Length: 255
Image (cartoon, rainbow, N blue to C red):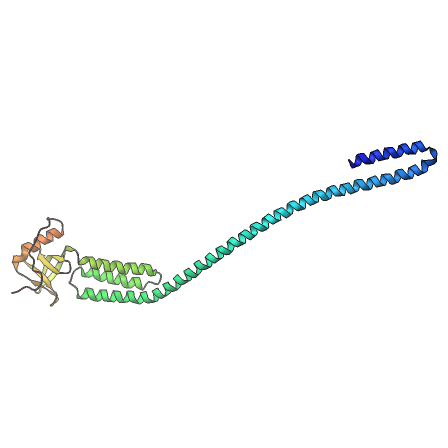
């Protein structure tokens, strides 16, 4: 529109100059030059305005993008602040648990040593059965609690497992072959353990039976009348015979 107006103005100006005649030729040249400069200046101003308009649009777009980035950064900062609070709480909880574990370790290690000592004393005063197996179990526990590279949880697990095994002895019966010394003689026999109530033996030849005397801590012979009940119980312990009631000399035997 602006360019068309300028061309129209130039046409009118040239028409007026031709109408005025030669007297005005010099002035018309001056006018044309001024008009040309004015038009060039106007065109340049329009170009600058167009360039500024494009630059303005680009700046507005960059501002919007930067504002979006700023909003996102603020949102992320808020979220990260919440994350940091949670992580600090977790770290504090882990630190508390760590201190508890240190305290537990300080108290648990001596307690495990005490448990093993008590268990060793209990085995020594208990009925005599599986002596080598139980002795090896105590040695294994000693080595475990003294192992620096073994975790405290594993040490505790092993001690509790040993206690569980010992507890099971009181609720089970078993029969195993053994070589015994009875009244100064060597006897090949089947040893029958009934929980922690009593331990009997039945010679392989069947001519001798007896029991473990906790008071004298020695094997003693008992009446052959108990040979059949003991033999039947040994067979039941080995699952060679169905379960039935038997009459065994539990407790002190009257002469």
